[in-house]
Image 1 (cartoon, rainbow, N blue to C red):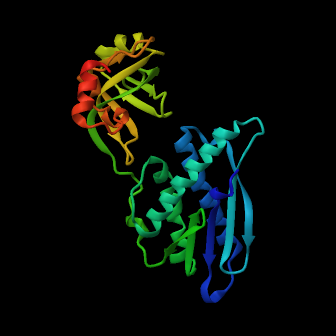
Image 2: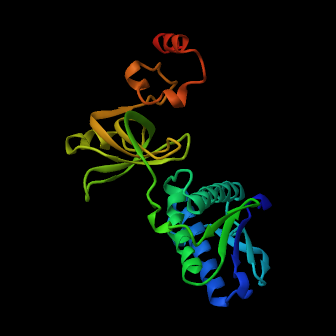
Image 3: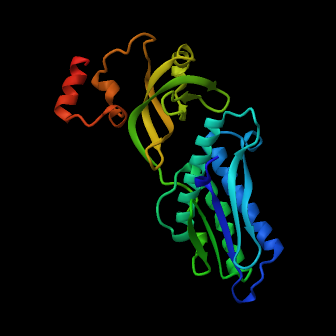
Length: 277
């Protein structure tokens, strides 16, 4: 895999000049837990299904002790392109989490938020272990975790927004044991959206199982506009045709402007929608 996805950890023992093995092992464990949590979130999988391993690229024991790791696939039969894309996403989210933990700047999404609790634990080595600072980072940029920071105050929960709109995908995996829910598999972006619906719409949902549909309701999105969950309004599910796409009406357009709009002036775009162009 590309060396651009290198992830680094550094421990500075200050005047003591010696990094204890136990501290270095703990810091490494927390780093790998953070990367694993991000992979689980991005891939929507469990720890036993992970496809990425992290191999050592650089290791030095003198203070500041440094560890650099690179991702690789666990199995030769794994899709290399998929693994490469996954690794790139994991490192991108790790970088966002590093910036957030180091300075409280930026915003979290679900994936980067999964790493924060592990990265916050690194601060205990600074506050209680006597280390001057710990640095984490990726792609050649390091961020310092210093003893002056109160990391306990940092939220581990991403800021989400709720709006009325719609999402499109394949209806699947209906669950009626813990409330009326199904999963909507977005076939364009690979997102999986958890949808909650009313019991009166169960037959409607069952008829759409395995079909592409538009689902309308209250959409919860994380920063970056990725949909997380949707509460479907009554009757708010519409199957899409299996043949050529039908022209959009304004009701279907609600909540979809950002996906379909290509920069055309608003007046011209609405004319095209009206005329089905």
